Length: 171
Image: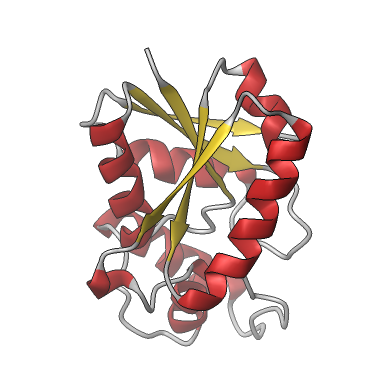
């Protein structure tokens, strides 16, 4: 059995993430969406909310599991007995970052491979920060996220009220 992890903050999960995870599930026996809990960036959703949104997105796909994690991704891969880390590439500039990260992970654990999947053309512009920014400005994100995520974003924006969105809503 080949198990892969697909790590990220998924704040929020969007159709690009879902495409990569679904395609990875065709390649591997199991894909674990690994929702990182403490990134060095500001988030809109709590770890529990991000996990719940991702779980709902994949409730009909038994090959995709969702869980949270802390610490080094490579350590989490070992804990989950995963042999592969899946990453998505949207644009050419993603490659340099992912290439360096894959080399660092290879240095830390030679037994874990990194596989990068190229995003589907219709999702190349998508990022969580784009989705958050559009949603906080009351734009329509229905073509970017599943319906339950759109609803969660709308509720978050309402709860923000008259407060302007945080300045650091960047991926």
